[in-house]
Length: 204
Length: 221
Image (cartoon, rainbow over all chains, first blue to last red):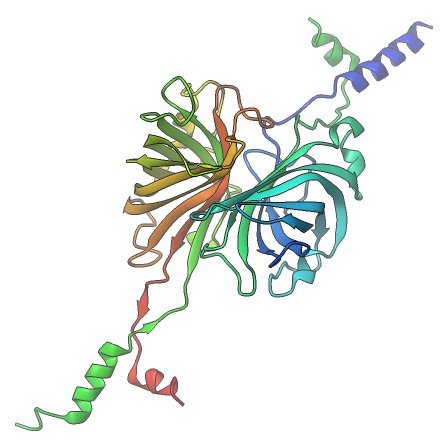
């Protein structure tokens, strides 16, 4: 009975006290966007995600062996200094096959969709002079790595990006360079196996 | 004395001067993210406030020859003085005067924001290592959207020093821009006023390339 209680305690403590977390976590990206000419048109943004050292990605990614890309699609609902978008979706892909090439957008949307999300809000600030910014809120709803994020942490992620039509990085055929990040509202923590003595030490 | 004057040579010389061929625009980039604070207490972006930002690069042009796996590249921006917010009718613009940016290359890999800056690690761990680039802002502006908490920024710099100065291009154009959001967003370390994400660009679009007469003629074939 004593052994059973100890085992139960370990399970409970492991569930309640996942350990090990980096301070800052984000998916950091740089991309190219196609902006619709009018309301009702579709925004398409294709980007590449980089290893954000010394911060970390919210879920572990293998940058040594895979390339990670991000694709955003949304319908323009209003235009002006503030462009609003509806029905926005975001996808993060993991791919070791084809290198991302902006002249062929399909190379940024192939591979395994590890996270699929929807925007609950999404807008773009476009001042008449200077660069703009895009911001929104993402809820992750699918993808092969969705379960790496606890259900209570899957909603409400911040999407934030600079948007610049005049950047020297603008690729032919695109309208704006986007550089930004997607990040959780709280630190996403992994679980870690620990001995009973290690767990007990936490309470000393 | 033989032929001092040669019409062919004269025309050739003129063409050589006139057809220094512009090379394709080359842009070198440092992609970064980080956090900033204002030195003075009180409302953010008030006139007279000094803006200080510490960043770390997470992607850098291969042309720089830096391996971010073994060396960190950090940015320290300081001395930007706010002229105060100006209402542009639905959004705010804040111009800044002064300001410097230094970028460091450091195998120490010790960048740490800590909390309540300035502190024991910030900006110190962002301003150690070998000087990669130093510049002085000639302009810097922040654009706040109607919420007053999110927006974009851009600035131009004159290069002053650092290991890359003059090595990538001549007459380079240095620009620094990105997006920001003020405190209250996810994961911002305690005591910082805002977080930023953006790109430092070195643009060599104004460069020229010396070419031979043969190469020049081949352009017209």
